[in-house]
Length: 101
Image 1 (cartoon, rainbow, N blue to C red):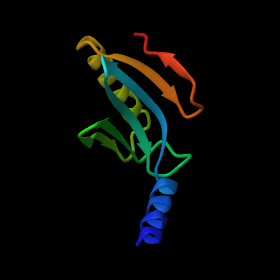
Image 2 (image 1 turned 120 degrees about the horizontal axis):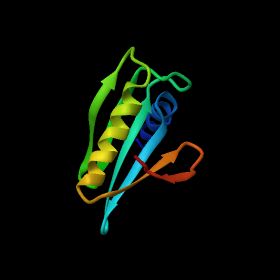
Image 3 (image 1 turned 180 degrees about the vertical axis):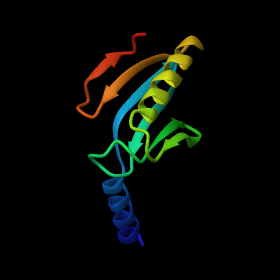
């Protein structure tokens, strides 16, 4: 059973990759707003996932409009910033940059 689960996770992680994410913190709480691409190397289709300790949900999706998920993720991270969260942009190369707007 473990082998089957690991195989499925490997397949899923190969099919979806995140290139852009915002890590938002407020005290000890942490949230992640992440752009996930279904086909690595292609900007669409994509999803914007909102991840917190209680689970995750897809906030927006795009099948054809390049840049849609990225702009929605940035706007949502900016909105969290107005609500007292400190958000930092994290790229696939693991470099962190403060969210400026």
